[in-house]
Image (cartoon, rainbow, N blue to C red; front, side, top):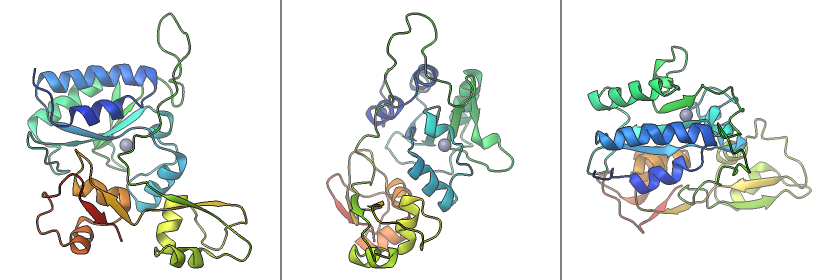
Length: 249
Ligand SMILES: [Zn+2]
């Protein structure tokens, strides 16, 4: 059986999931593999700060996200050349994969009427936050979901707030914007920072890794693909190369 284009990365992401969700997701992944359904699984486990940033960006609708408890994945349809598109969910094979995911106990965000979220599959066979123990004996130590692999843009630095600091001053020190600092740290009111608070400062550059797409890098960095293309003089958004250093702002 041929491996999917994003196989290595997909498996690494699936490994972050809570145990029962992971077992079901691996069955689903095997189904996709068997039928040659090309997908990129680009997100699984999220921290609260990441989730808050997503809510503020409008790409997620809830702070009670199944991603926080390792019970959800996000995927995007791909093709055998590794191109991905968020416009391909209607493809027959993707719909077949969605059907199989539902059969295995996942809910598909594409079915939601209030906040359509086509990349999103969440495992509802187990109540929210309860997927901690593997089904069946032996119930020995359950590994905690692994931290996010280093594929994310977050080669962030951390700044500790000192007396007299403002978010604006910190932003200008790091050549970023207040809005970006707010998004990265889930700060609702830019005036409410406190001494000793750790502020994550988003990276200003990113080095392309295998399996990356410009769309994903853009979404993780909170900018548009067009902006990245403009910043880096990229004519064709599908042509980035491993090791390429991209300006993010
Ligand atoms: Zn999701």
